[in-house]
Length: 206
Image (tube, rainbow, N blue to C red):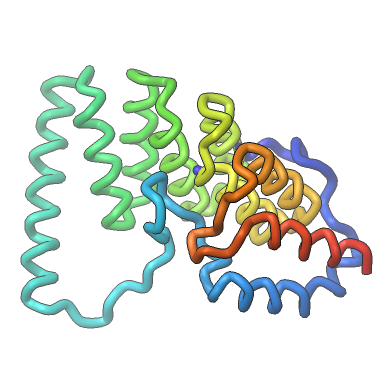
């Protein structure tokens, strides 16, 4: 997929000026997706550009999505203990960029089932998109606590630390934890996370 203020180390100081070129290099290294955090389902980028025009098929899909949302809103109002309905509702809000509603739905889901690392990670993604990076880090940390092998939450944590909190050292630690959990871990674009860690470490020596 956790927003602990300074839990992952001190922020990078004035040496960050040197990182401008390096970050540009990393962006290319990751194939242009480095600025996105990812949903618990692998390879689903959070940051997708909204189309300027909707095709008839897209409008039909949106109408179907709205109908499903209304149905799930009714279900959760009538059966507030339905964990699955809250999760599905959160996912639909997630996919339709309704950040605050997704956060609320995921929180309801977590109240009913607090040990679901996927839902916790998706909550973190929504916090990040809602401009709440510290809350995102808290959610990712909780997902890691629930499942230490949860790769998406570890990867997302590193992205938020670097791009939202300017904490390069924290990013290195987050991704080192991912490599420790899985030495063959790959970024969503197929780059070995170990290689990213090595490049980040090189940058801090300059």
